[in-house]
Every structure is written in C-alpha cells, then in structure tokens.
Image 1: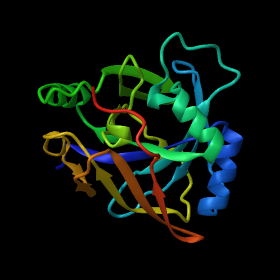
Image 2: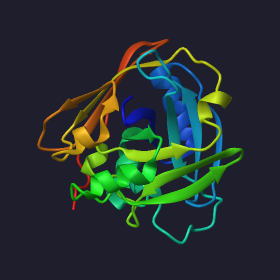
Image 3: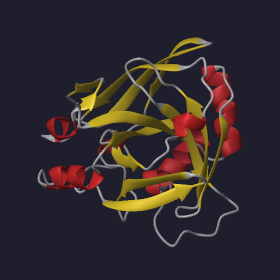
Image 4: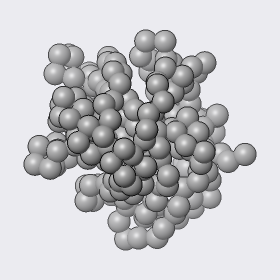
Length: 224
C-alpha cells in the first residue's frame, strides 16, 4: 500500500462567494457548504471529486473568514501571504495546493525531516464531527509553490462521507519540482511526478463542462 493518497485539492479564494461562483463557472457544479476552522480563522466549501484512481478525493474552496477573530498564528496554505492575496484579487480563485492522506502523520514527518524538509508539526484540528491531524508550519508556507503536499491524518470520519456525489471526477494530478527524495518518501498513489525548476501542480478533471485542467499559481515561495 502506498504511504500516502491524494486527499484533496485546495482552491483559494478571496471570499467564499467568489469561490462558489468560480466553481459553477469553471466546473459546472455548485460546491456544498463546508464549515469554519476556528483554529485558523478560515472557512470552506467542498466538492466530491473521487474517481477510481483517487478514492475519497474532494476539492476544497477555502478563504479567510471575515467574521472570525484573528487566529493568533499564521494561517495555513499561505493564506496570509500578501502576493497570494493580491493574485486572488486580480485573477480570482486559483488552485494553489494539494493535501495527501496518510495513516501515520508523525512517521511521515520524520521521513521528510530526514531529507532536510521541514513540513511542519502535527496540529490537531476539528470542524463539526470531523477530527484530524495536519502538518502546518509556523510560517504557514505550503513549500515548493504548493507542489509538496500538506499531510493529513483523519480520525473516525472523512469529509467524503458527508458529500453528495457530483458529476466532477479527478482524472489525473501532475506534480512538478518536488525536492530530491520527496517522491520516494511520499509514494503518493496515482500522482505523476515531473522534474522542473519550480514547483507546481496540474489537475485534470472530467466535469459537466467537459475536461477541465486546473494549473496552480506562478511560483510564490521556495523550500527554505
């Protein structure tokens, strides 16, 4: 069994309303309500995109929650990054990252640390009945321009259990520019790895609007 599996794609939006409108215009479907993340001051909407190669995969549209108090820490996924927010304002919602599911998060973090990769600490979070541990750096960086996945270990329940099936399915995920050794350490099922001077991801989905390719933003940060 592979060490990790694709869990979800992360689309950042300036507001959730803009994210929902993007989803309807781009993918031809309306995302379901998600919830709030008190730990990070964010909220989301979700879409089931599972397919045979990517079981229990979903798409997360995430934005800073304007009604939430400041979280007292840097938000995940670079959402506090000024260039990222400027890009979302200028270009609208964008695919920025992906999250890989694993069964032993702490062991995965140790494996990456042995390669000199600081993926962050295991942080406990919750939303409604969902409980999980997720790798978050104190600076909130995604690393490798979003190519190096955030790692997540779910508790008893997974979001896909609460999501209705949609007419959108993830067909492939291409990841470029991972640091040396990361591919072997992660062994993520179904992901196409490609070399490159910069990081980035490209997701291909079948949708009611036909085949849609989502490409991540231009490089924003580098592996320290």
